[in-house]
Length: 234
Image (cartoon, rainbow, N blue to C red; front, side):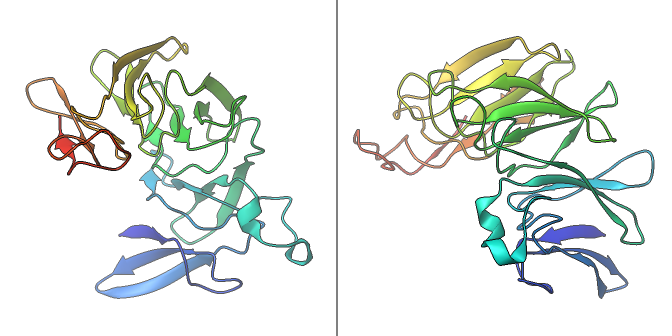
């Protein structure tokens, strides 16, 4: 098994990638700021035998004498089973900031993901990246169409991507959206509190072909104020 930890490890305790075999944990890499910091999401395995992931903070321009890596907006990395880490991309806020969800291996062979912040309005992005680190920003959120996608993407049988934003939309309680591989965006739903608020997780596809998800707040107990309500499943 391969996984990430968002803190501890060597250097400034900025997180690790580890392997577990027969109950024995091996630390493959400790992030040091320049190669990333605080990996919030897990890894995905590619057909090339490598694993791909993201860190919320850090990046190539970090220098230990210049302050905390938490001021830098994150990375995309590749790591081999033996622990050789390659920094494929350092975000610069213009192209996104602080990816918090796992990457998705698309049907077309590209990697897809979301960033919580960055982009033209600072509200987050959806991106495509090659295994060599060539990034294309497919969509930039602006608040009205959603903001802060903490959850990852799901690619349905129709080839389109589906996801959620934790904030933004008509009522600023979050949204559900659809995106084509060409970047055509459709906001499918905007939460209003009574039907849920703040979906921080992504979606899953049921055997019935429908999409399912959760909201952190809203629903029963919602009184119109922020963070009221006990959450919903939709």
